[in-house]
Length: 114
Length: 114
Image 1 (cartoon, rainbow over the protein chains, first blue to last red):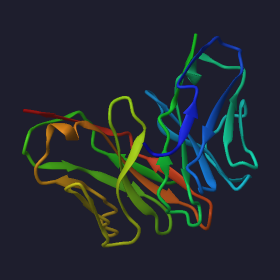
Image 2: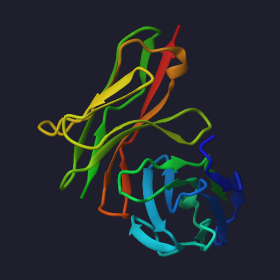
Image 3: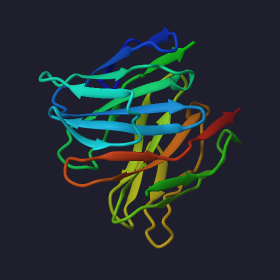
């Protein structure tokens, strides 16, 4: 158990809908990262937050947004969902004090868009 | 941009065989290098890391050496076990300060048989 929790574990929804994925980092970790894992794109970095502020951005679509709250949990919002958004979404956390700190991964949320 | 290339799988070995999974990278500056492992149905776990040239990361019998001259970080294990069956991802971190972004290879599936 990495100490990173993600909810829900599975999510099934329809095209055009909006969903919210939630992540609670390990106790004491200030950085939260979101990754998408799909068969065709592999593992891709989406976005990083550090202590409430956006720190790094990857190939995140405009339809996707994220935020980190004062209690350090984070939410990833996916809107106008398309079939191609079906994937495993991972959250990771680290202390964030330096860029090469180990990132601890949660178990993931499997999103299926029908 | 940064990229990681690792050998295609699946790799199928008998128990106690020697394992090598090749990984090469392209990056600006001096990235930190990682191997992550993903067991079926689970999130990613850090296996080992190296943060500068000639560093050797090691854990659970696995080793990898950061070779700047060949831009490589090959994973090796002298004697694999059935329990090592998983998907292995080579990755690098670029960024400075608190900004951090893991770039992953496509993953190599390892299957170890008795």
